[in-house]
Length: 555
Image (tube, rainbow, N blue to C red; front, top):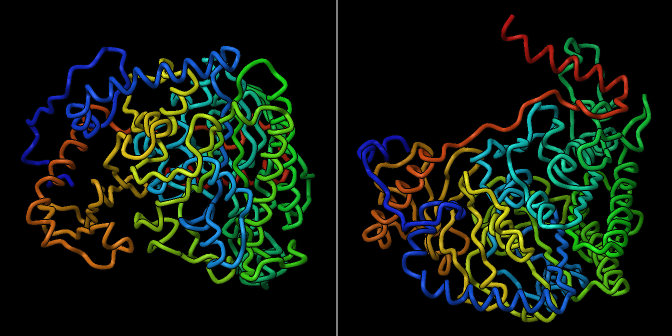
């Protein structure tokens, strides 16, 4: 990529004039804005009137927001009776949400868990804040406190905020949800690698090998720090805004098991229900975030009866998650908040294809899965329900990126003026798409990173796959027409490259030069687990081992 920019060091990007306090976007947004400014301004006037009317009918308050993010569920596995039948299971509750709202048929995420969650929470692609990687064990870093999250933005606008379930944005205190704008948070510090893939039960079933307390003869073991012991890591914690957290349901010396993982999932569902009731009873609007750990599961020990023709581990747990979502939707009706609450249900990335044989899931429509920038890795089901405002049973083919939800929900919550203006915000305000429907989107591009490496660029239906060494001329790379070839199997490099290569090179140039003006930053660093009041002795010992190993290269 450096070679690509060598000849352009003196290029100046001329952008349309902006008010000093306006949100800063990537360069491509301004290309679109220059062509549609008048149309968008007229739409915005109408949208402002519609949102003001909703608030007037809602006691002067903006809508509640309930955001449900489901782990490792690929495109086509939610929201459709037909595709459910093909897969061999049903998701009736989510299907109902889809039929009562809008289906975002071209929702893009990041390739894996942490990056997608960071993009949603900050409106920024994670290469910008050092959060593009997915950590499983101790790392000593996380989402920096200088990042501004949607919870912080909405809190400033008067919202009560709660987070329940997976977080996965770091093991240092500044990165935790109760230090990132949430009034209440119940969450695991790590993710399902620890919680269901490499504990003793998983080792017994050979979901993982080489670990577990009774699964190998250790006579040749010299380095007892090498193999991970999931039971020594912190599991689930709870806490209030800007206060220390406490680990729950784990005693000193206790082993973490699949049964305890199931109990954690049930507890989070219970806490999501409790938070919904508590938030609905308050006078303020609420932002409730529920990120289940299921359907991801390793061993089969907590599934007593298989109730789907598919019978896969993840499929069975996804059926359970769907029933839990149905319970929450029913409770919203009972509490009288269903009509004034925006509900969003979506996946965070593609299928975890390494576990396809056990999970019951393989890529259905697109090629690839979690960890890839193929469409199968970054295209997900996404549904938005807002009775009386969003047209039911609507389907939009406009391009949306998960970061767009940050800016869009900030606007819907009356908090757009709280969004920071000193950094790139990748998220585009898509309010017009939600309220007006198909063809009212404001994005036709996305840059796809894997950790901090740019791997693909999409413009309209055309996708450029960037070779590992970068490119000087995009005509040498693979192009795909995603409408004609959604599985990216048949490059049309000659047909598109003849006219499009220069266009894509220009996009890359503008993007990289914008990064020079607003450089990528580092995550927040710190001591793992500092701020947990009741660390177990074995956990303290593990932190000491981690710190020793970190300083060994300097000895």
